[in-house]
Image 1 (cartoon, rainbow, N blue to C red):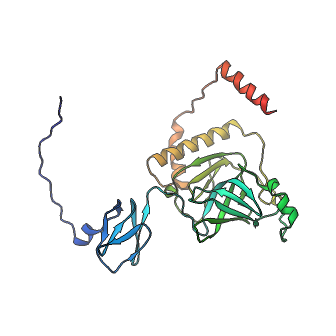
Image 2 (tube, one colour; image 1 turned 30 degrees about the vertical axis):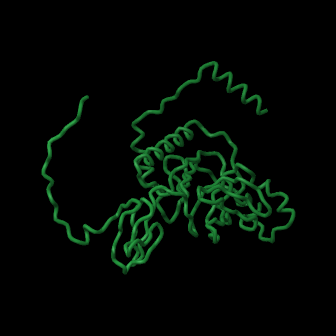
Image 3 (tube, rainbow, N blue to C red; image 1 turned 90 degrees about the vertical axis):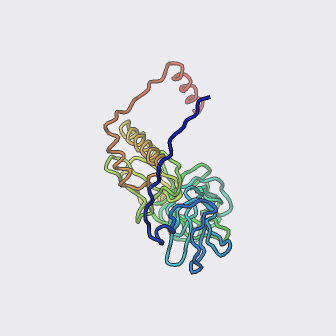
Length: 289
């Protein structure tokens, strides 16, 4: 049996200051962050024998005397003002349930959406009966976190025209820890496509729209055919997002645009379908009609 062997080497000792040697930025469960009792315990930590210990694997964040550990991979923990992209999972009385990659389904109240035409009035029983005409199961929406309930569930709202029902595009599901927090998460890229970087890790890619009618109230979705060039741009952006996420790079408009420009030297390969596959696709399309 072959055995790999190597000779012992002398380890060079590096002189570090006491504060730099004790400080840890990346920890795993059970690591002692600090033994100083002057710090306050935050999320992802616990006290064991007067020592602040990490309960999750992640990055140590210090804010004054507060120490918390931000997990490297976790469900979305929403805060007020976060931009999210979600999918409607259920229509209930005066509310929609939305999947936002969090521990519990988020809630979108009927009173938290714009009525078609931008009317400002109290919601009536007729509005409740026509909720499925606004949003139904399977629809994708962009919204903002309005508040957080005591059990951790998120309350959403779409009272701005930039929020609402999403039309044609591509949804990419990534880790929420890779999304960089910015002042705006809606970006019109110069390559001809737009991107919504949801804080919950859901990224929406779609062709840059023209003038949107304000009377739509956020429920208008364009069903016009998307050109081949736009589809190629969106597909390239999707692959760029997956490549950046595979290397644990932060996702924001600049990093995505740099990755897109670097990928332009590679041509898009188009695979033609065989005659059998085309027949199957044709039969499936005829079933829908």
